[in-house]
Image (tube, rainbow, N blue to C red; front, side, top):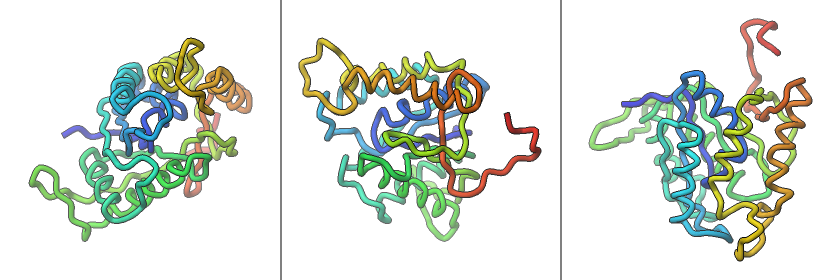
Length: 239
């Protein structure tokens, strides 16, 4: 069974690529095993189809070099944070036993982002309780709780609690975003316009990373928020 170092969870295919794919590419390059879990197929999206999104997600995964990618097929726009949905995520967490989970922004424009954030975070906690029993392929799973849960930044310009230098990985990040050709800027597209299909939005992905990089004195960075205080072994760990 594959054990992951990082599991990135997103409400929709492309949430992760837009928000933390530079961090993922960097850790993959350093030898870490990273997986992606999409909660929905993005079937309510204005542009494209779930089938197109699935193919695009596969292309993005190849660009990032992730170890696994799964989709739970929850209802886009209508999934809720309840026992049924929590148990499905718990099964994935216990299956891959990640040390770190990255999940949606706590507060954001799209209602699924905040819902997905809380659902993923609650599932991480519950996954560590041995009295909650889950089975996969007829085998009872052992409890597992990730050491850390971090929330990536999405539509809203939320102040990050920490940022990750992704200067050497911005091209890889942009390649993973462009894999979702049906969703983003294409001057020849006949699809309806959306808030994320504009040229400005596509450019904003890179200039937001540049601005976060400016804050810490590097070329590009990605920001995250935390649920509890970040701890370092030494004050010299900070860059």
